[in-house]
Length: 107
Image: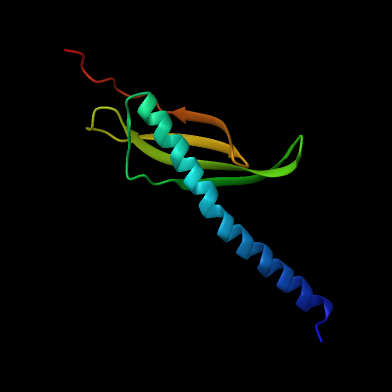
């Protein structure tokens, strides 16, 4: 039979497994949002990679959710990489911040 410590470890393992399964969905949503934002500004999302740099629990009207912060890179003229940051609460976009970038020459 299981004792209390075993049940705690099994619960913790289950929560970790659920987090790993769901984190791919959140990362995919963040990538879609970054691609759409870059297209709207005529920028190019580089490598289509999103790196999570922060994870915090926050309280929303419908209960607690996680605030995830992702970092990505984009280019405006193709000669330099610029960092961007995307913040989501649950599946909802909170903000996208882009470093100041060089505009393409207008001929």
